[in-house]
Length: 564
Image (cartoon, rainbow, N blue to C red; front, side, top):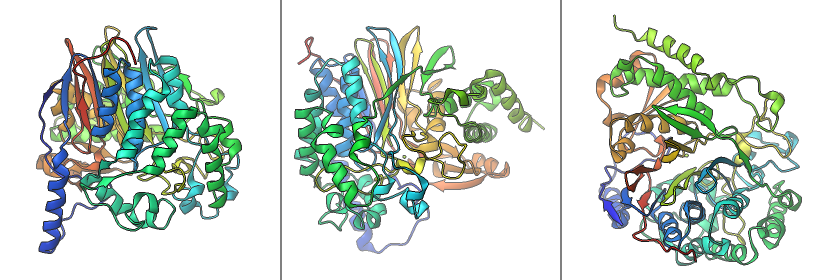
């Protein structure tokens, strides 16, 4: 494997943490420096190159799992599923068996590209009357959980598009749970932020040291209970999660802790739905991304608006360009909120205005006239055969529902928070067996019908803007520089988050002058997404992992011709 070194520039901050510096005692400073030193012993490889395939994920252990599948003769789909399973072990605050998974898959042999909608489902007993404390119940605890769909989604794509067996692909995750991995500084900070919620709920004994303390960066985290669950799934198949011993344990745990998820919900098995990807343009290239209930149409609208601006307003590093970018993001997010529909209820689909280029030109003209002169996890994989996967999965918020069974070892999601609870006419209003509204936008860009780029990011509503900015920078920057560059985000409320110390002061002043409230965040902020991408360049593939989190990119040195 040929690799190019990259250096981490700064520590991350947990999302929503204020960036204000606080005075600290000398002992506290020394402790943090020691933790930072320990965490950097295993500094991830941020950029890599290989002719035999490439994997980029949010954790170096998951990247290694994917690379191992390629080395054993597996394809990009096998590698993606192995990496996704491994992420559930070594990045448990973001995803796992208890969550949901969506992806774009390009299968070279059949010439097809599909959007695999692995949405979770609301349980059959999901009615508002069951949520006494609406705000709290839908965010944390057993009541916040939808029917996990990740195991069914993994099995579906493996069976249809993979080469390796379920047992082979799940093995790296078993080893990782059995042998453990080292806690990163980022994971320590996230756990510290959520400690009170973990400590007060059944997940505490699993994810806190001695059930009460935050594990320090550099210490090894072993998960024997999760390893046992994974071994059972390896032996009995994914069906055990929905119909077997694992399903029985979930049922009993939910029943004992006030959840509404039951065995009959699991037995319906939330099989994924293969949908037609949304199609957009990226320069002269064809861009395919995730349809609803994902947020691909938001990304396409942003791309269409931004490319319709006058050229002098497309430079996002200038004051005028940054303001136009913020307004583009803001307008697309408003359109997403105002034009929801459920793809399973086709009668609700009225028009495709968000995808309409004429509409994008109108919005761009409105923006230009003002400025005329006077969180989740993502992985991307490609293989040497031409297959490509962009996969985004989540348990919704950091540490999901903060609930877990002591007999199973994985966190339940809190996707109950992703439904509408106020308007019964809303397509994502809470109802039995409904799917939650998602913000994911896994994307594959094609050149001459060949996958050129697989890209995506976690970060809720920040996902489309993050991908947009990296795609824009790729037009002139090298891959690592495009991912590394500072980012902005504009919320629905008009608050612009900025990695302020890395952005020119005249740009910041222009944003404030345009009426935006600034939220100044740390450089390389956790809040600003985490792009994992793989690009085909000549006879090799380049992988880049965002320095904002614990990601790593790697490719195999050689590949077995016969899958094991």
